[in-house]
Amino acid sequence: MNTNQFSCAVLVRTARSLLFVPGDRPGRFDQAAAAGADAVILDLEDAVSSERKEIARTEVASWLDRGDYACVRVNAVGGPEHQRDLDALRALPGLLAVMVPKPDDPARLAAIAEHVRMPMIALVETATSLLRATELAAVPGVERLAFGHLDYAADIGATPTQTAMRHARSTLVAVSRAAGVAGPIDGVTTAIDDLGGLSKDVACARELGMTGKLLVHPRQVVGTHNGFRPTDDEIRWARSVTDATTTGDEALSVDGQMVDAPVLARAAALLHQAE
Image (cartoon, rainbow, N blue to C red; front, side, top):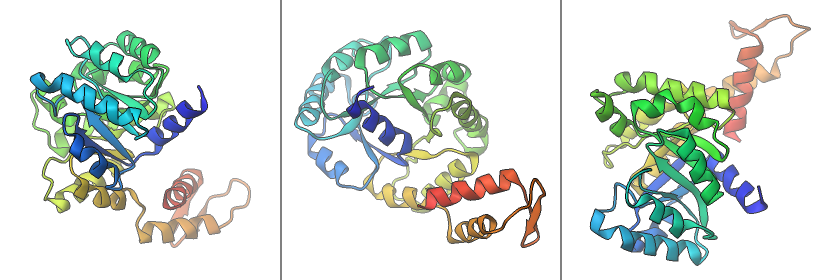
């Protein structure tokens, strides 16, 4: 991995907010880049109609070739636009990562990684993708898993509520941890004016162990960042725990709560997030 690929991989692993922008709307690219999201995703898939795919590829390639930076979501594997997308993205200096939707076949995903030679985000959107998530996360070049909960719910015939999607989200968290990749990215909140709903969605994702979120509008950036940041109470608690000392392996109590190795690890993680 060269220096540029390493830098891109670090950004992909740590991004809390990833903001979608339609690939055929170049007038929005600079606005999205200035919105404060950790990463922009130029979308060649769902946000672009079939008759405008080539226009989108041209606009995205032009923007990335002039030195601007973004991830790109390509069209699904096996579709007529997929290979054209990959060919258009090769060697573009501003490409941070490739997001691959519905990557049901790990072998095909590995072939994409070999072709683009850039960090990849595997967007789990089907039951097959979820059941093969362990294999997908193990593909060299895959830095992170993301959850397309709306497509996943449609695939399994469920309602995309937090309760119905909890198992899938928790599965992706466990798989990511076992594979040694960064915590997964949660799906979008479609109600762009419902910032309270956004806060609840981020809180749910964070509670389960997810570490980022896909966004559809710039006004969702601040709420997402706030939601993934430890609260003041959590920081105070973490500091009180880490300030305490132990003798040998003996557990201790802080403010009436037993403190042992897992609790110390959570406190350290919270302080790291706060920094």
